Amino acid sequence: MGYDREGLITINMTTPEIFGHYEVMRNDLLKTGAAVDMAESSSPATDIWSNQIGFDWKGKDPSFVPLFDVTACTFDFGKTIGWSIKEGRDFNRAFITDSGGLILNEAAVKLTGLPHPVGEIIHWNDKDHKVIGVVKDMVMSSPYMPIQPGIFFLDYGWQSVITVRLNPAMTAQAALSALEPVFKRYNPGSAFEYSFVDEDYAKKFSDEKRIGSLASVFAGLAIFISCLGLFGLASFVAEQRTREIGVRKVLGASLFHLWQMLSTDFVLLVLISCGIAIPLAWYFLYQWLQQYEYRTPMSWWVFAAASAGALAITLLTVSYQAIRAALMNPVKSLRTE
Image: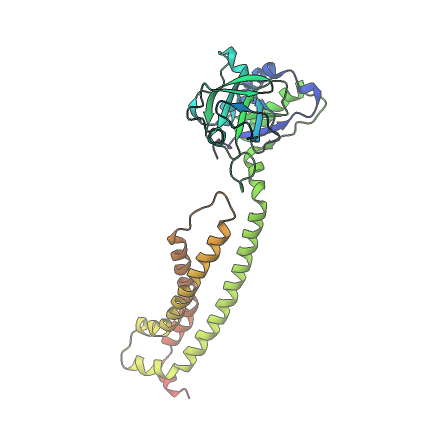
């Protein structure tokens, strides 16, 4: 992800009363002990609300007009969300020149083609801005698309969102209860409305979760129906071989041997079906995963576990009838027509 979502909350700045009190509000929030850090930005950590053109740098082709995601933020933004500095440094209050500094993500560095971006000058909005750092790419917008080139800059007048990192030593409920009076003090006309960053990010996968839930339900139904058919087939086979089982018992066959005899055919069928299903499953899953920019590898143990599960379910289903037939009195078995 490139940043730490756990314990982050977002509050939208929807009323004019909340603007212009950043430093004092931040100090009051930190004094409660419920917040570890706080920052303001023009976009939340889970989205990008602005992108712009008009950037120029040394060696850029004049005909090239790239589009950059831009995020205005306060000094404490990176520390609050927990981004990872790859080169250079973070914004620092001790450096007055940081007011005109830029921090690029890795995608932006790749786009500009600057081999050593830290210290380079990027011209934007009729001003020269010095690159002070490079951060690791962060998945802030769509997780289904490649990360776009992004630029972060300091601007306390272009803020829309407050991001707060809760104290991990406190429960979320206790921390929020302690923060609410502070926000009420600076924003008395609005309710204290917040959202958890990890929950906002999870909403991006609502379709996948719905598909997963439906797939689980229908797979469960399919397995249940298959087990019913398997149970009936095992009953039929056991009934057909009743006399054979009786003869084998008289000749000294053990319970395990009889169970093995009745189960072998079913196990063989399951192994054949797995041999057909696994290549097909791998192919269709591979094709499905290609639509996602970030995807998990398909490990062999997933298919091995599925095959082992199918075998286990088959043996449990068949074993009842197999053991029942094997335990039958051989005298009754031999009398069966």
